[in-house]
Amino acid sequence: MAGEIKIRKNWLKGMYIYTIIAAGLNGLCIVVAPELNRSLWGLPAMEPIIFGITGSVYLAFGILSIFGLREPLKFSPVLLLQLFYKVIWFAGVVAPLAISGKFPAYAVGAAIVFATFVIGDLIAIPFAYLFKKTTD
Image 1 (cartoon, rainbow, N blue to C red):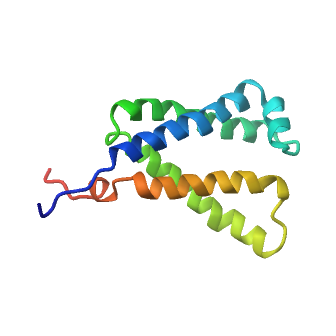
Image 2: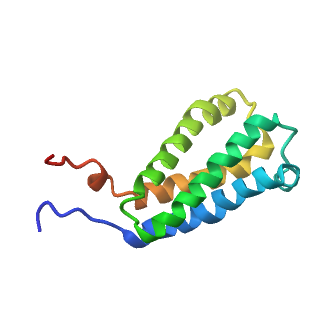
């Protein structure tokens, strides 16, 4: 049927589950046990307020993704925000550091995980649904 929007609900739910596990648990660990998180990832010492903000945001993504399992379309803007901040991070942080040869080895794992999120979100997010015109 013409005008029908393709929704990949299984991909959406898969990305919510991935976000709950990867972002949510990492965020919880950052908030509750920041030193443990730092040592698990091999991270250098970080400013606690900024690290805590990062953990809080990751935890919020995880919590909102729990709601996304029940209402995949309604919460798809959560994945859209996740996609945008990761793409911005690649363009504004990773690319300049990589070009200058200053990209730290400890961040390679994060870049790989972020890349899997970008690919998964691009497949899962129903862009046509999110950006369709409404008649309000």
